[in-house]
Amino acid sequence: MVAAAVHPPTAAPDGAAEEEGRLLFAQPCDFVAGAASDAAMPADGLPEIAFAGRSNVGKSSLLNALTGRRTLARVSHTPGRTQQLNFFALGGRLMLVDLPGYGFAQASKKQVASWTSVTRRYLKGRAGLRRVLLLVDARHGIKEADRPIMDLLDEAAVSFQIVLTKTDKVPAAALAARLDAIARELARHVAAHPAIHLTSAHEGSGVAALRASLAALAAPGAPR
Picture (tube, helix red, strand yellow):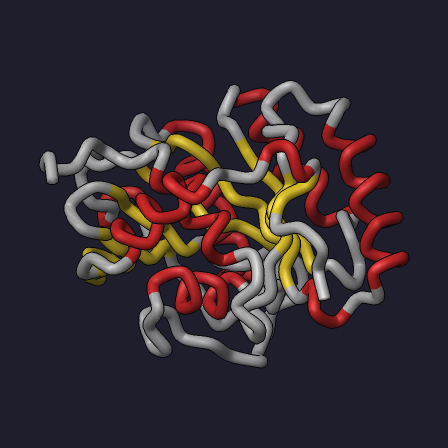
C-alpha cells in the first residue's frame, strides 16, 4: 500500500480541498472534440489540464478513475490506441485533454509523426493550458522517451507535474527510492511542479488528492 498520495506528504491537500475535488469531479463530464489537426481543436475557453505519457502508461484508466466513469476514455492494451487529442468538459469549469501516447505504438510512422506534431504544437501554444500531467509508470520511473516532453515544456514555460501510475504494483522500498530519483531529476526542470502524485487506478488510491489539485486550477464555480 502507498503511504501517502503526494510526495512530499506536506504537499498533500487537506480535507476541504479533497471535498472540492470530489464535488467537481461528480459533475457531468462530456466529450467535446477529438482533434487530429490544429483546426479540429475546440476554441480556447475553460482552463485545460492535459494528460501526457508513454503509450500504455495508464492515461485512460486514470481519467476514468478521476471522473468515476468506466468508459469516458477507452482503455486498451494496444499501444497507440489514442490517436488524437480528446477534449472532455468537466462541469463547465475544466477541460480535460487526453493526449496520444508517445513511444512505441501499433500505427504507421506517418500516423505517429502526424499526431506527435499536432500534440507538440498544442503543448507549446495552447493559451488555456494550465498544467500538463506527465504520467509515469511507477514500475519504471522516468524513461528517455519522457525527457523531450519535459524539455519542451520547460522551453514553453508550461507547468507540468509528474503523476505516478500503477503504484500498487511496486513494493514500498522500491517506490520510495524511485520517488527520490524523480524528485532529483525534477529539480533540474524550471517548469516542473515539485509535488509528485502517486496513484493506482486499479485500487483508487491517490485519486482524491489528484482531484483536489486539479479543482484548484478550475474556473470558479457558482456559490453554494
